[in-house]
Each structure stands twice: as structure tokens, then as C-alpha cells.
Amino acid sequence: MHDCKIQIDNVSVSYGRNTVLHNVSLQIPRNGIFAMIGPANSGKTTLLKCINRTLEFETGASFKGQICIDGKDTKRIRDVHALRRRIGMVFPLPVGLPFTVYDNVAYAPRMAGVKKKSVLNEIVERCLRQAALWDEVKDRLRGLGTMLSGGQQQRLTIARALSHDPEILCLDEFSIAVDPLTTMRIEDVLVELKKEMTIILVTNLVQQARRLGDLTCFLNMGKVIQTDETEKIFSENPGNPLTYDYIHGVFG
Image (cartoon, rainbow, N blue to C red; front, top):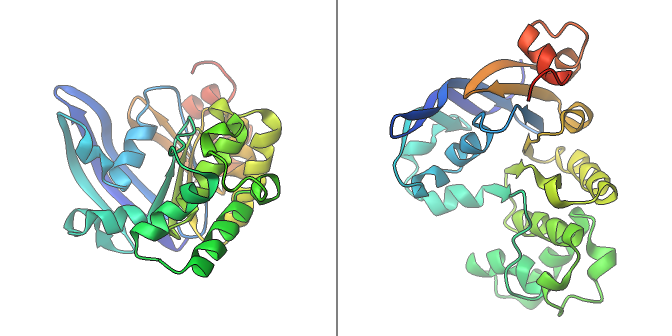
């Protein structure tokens, strides 16, 4: 049995009468890549918002069920900001803060009270190296992050997510606006990072899930159709005909 980092039990989410997640239950292991695949509007992004409690920002959203991180119910965690610092989020399009490259990465540590310049320098370099960006920007740290290329900005977003030492890293279709070469570089980064954190990878690219996922979860219309070892999901007999049809492009 995998060492469980996130336990999701009977989670349902509705917007008014529209239910977007139906009694979702999952166990997400510690230190690995948990891939989530499925057609658009299958509830993948909504599930990420439940995990870091940003669903609370959504007008009219109702949540039922339980999500535990390290055995603790996230609904009972009073310091929601501390919870969100434990969970790095990377969205489909890079969202650079209107700061320098340096300040993009140093922002969260500063907000957490880190003042010493040498410590900030170390954090910035470590996170940029982890995001495979240091060599490209080490001479441009005082330049605006928004002046970087799209692929560089996406890696800067990853560096920023890493700057508060998250235990969990959630990536929501990070490669949607990134060229294939940069996508490969980020994938290499994720393989390294999974040794020290739990990564949840939402992707519409089934082959990306096949390359990276230790486990893969297939969602469709807000329901978990199948969760299994990635090798099993992508085999000629995954055990569920709907999974087979999605993997082979019959729908989606």
C-alpha cells in the first residue's frame, strides 16, 4: 500500500444545481506523481481547488465530503494561508508578478518573514535551479519577469511555487502554452522534484501522463472512472472500457 499523503473521501462540488464532482474518493501517495486525465469539464481543476481550499473563492460553490492531508481534515485547519503555503499551484498560463525575476521568487519568502539577503539569494538560486531556469536568467535577475519568453515565464511560475517549500505541487495543464522542448525540460524537473514532494499533474495530454505518472486517475463527467498504476491504465486491457476508449481517442 502506498504511503498516503492526501485522502479524498466522497467529495462532491456543486454550483447551484450543477454538480461538477460526484462523490470522488482518492488516495494520493506521498512523494510521487499522481496524474489526472479526462476530457474538458470533467472536474480535474475543481478537485485541485478543493485540495488547497481556493474553491472558497468561487461564488455559489458548495462542497461536501472530506479531504485530509497527512491525516488532518483540511476543513478543520484554521490558518488557511498556512495550508495554501504547503501547496504550490501552477496554472495553465504563466502568471508573472509585475516584478523582477528575483523578486518573483523572493516574494513568498519575504512575506513569510525572511529578511536576510544571503538567505533570499540562496532561495532564489535554488528554486530557479529546481525549475531548470537558473542558467538562462542568472544574468537577468533584475529584469522584469514578464519580459521572459512564455516557456521561461512558466518555469518562473514553477520556481515561485517552489519558493515556499511546498509539500504538494499541483500543476494544471502547465504545458498548454509551452513549446515541446520546454515541456520536456519541465517534465525532467518534475521527475527530480517527486523525490521530495507529492506532485499532482492535471493534463489533457494522455502521453504526458503515461510518461510521468506513477499512478493515473481518469475522471469523466465529475466521476472517477478508474485509478490505477499508470502502466495498467495504458495497457491494452486497463480493466475499464471507458478508460480504453479515452486513451485511444474514441472520445474526449
